[in-house]
Length: 292
Image (cartoon, rainbow, N blue to C red):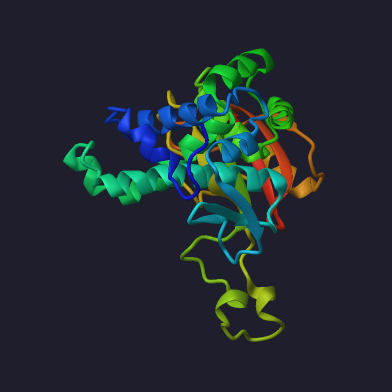
């Protein structure tokens, strides 16, 4: 049965759910949306979910924003890649649950969760969106068949029609192997003085001539649930690693495997690595998978 225009589908869901764990609640809501539109397939037909709940999808050029909700319209950034727009749509469907929970007063949660709800809601929306687009009962068997690697990530990204970054993050959720997935960019330490960036005067030449050499640094990172090792953001990797050479060789889209000493506290002396140079928002980025 279609919802009335303007109705929030998450409100009806909450009336029939007594789940008090946020992660479990967002997962259950994702399954509710899939059930309601008989959308259990890959790629997930989000249009069927939108139609089932009388939600309208709009695209528009948005400045520094992936998407937002206005009445029963979900608006996403039309300048993003199609795969990114798809994840933004799923994320905004999860934001409907956030609205419904806020209207409820968050009373279903323990006090400690209520006080930190605003801090954690984006993470829960990301988890819910991943479950909606790559539901565990459909996606994790594919991970078992294809294995855990960047190459497998490309294959599963094609099947799910979701970005490679989001797909590899979801592969880690399966927790079949201990792995860390990281995105790395060339850059400097936060406290490092870079004349060309701070407008510092120099004795001769151009300010950039006095800049310290940029290093390949951890920009973002995720880990399998079983992994307890911590990979700090902005940490640089040694220049003699295959991960670093992937950036230097400048060959886009080629997966490079190696066994590297990462010189990271707590990590094994040698770590099996995969790395691949890609472009994200116009920047050259190295995707790296660390097999622990």
